[in-house]
Image (cartoon, rainbow, N blue to C red; front, side):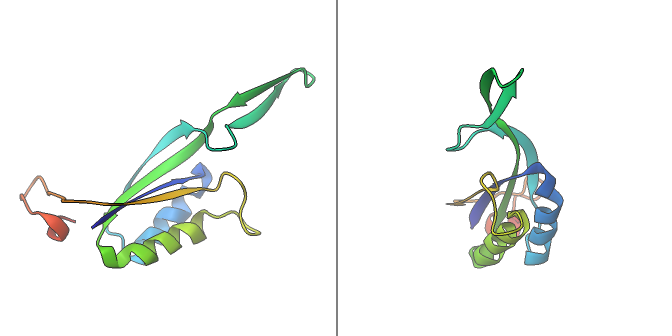
Length: 116
């Protein structure tokens, strides 16, 4: 099993979640986050260009746990749905894929893919 975490632009969340559902992802959760990447946030000019402030940007973090065989479909769905038109822009996001040792459904006690 794999955990996929995607950090995307907030305005793309509905397109990304729709794409994940179409790719076969049964469930996911997302939350709004604030942070910065290599570009060190967003440049904000205050008052007549006198001062430059670097501020962290708003993003949305989507997380899902999937069977190994859905990896390519899920990653491609996120890329297609999250990428800005015209080959993308800085800040479109990141996708992190990591191995999951186990998943347990609290209600039934099921383990592994049966708990997904």
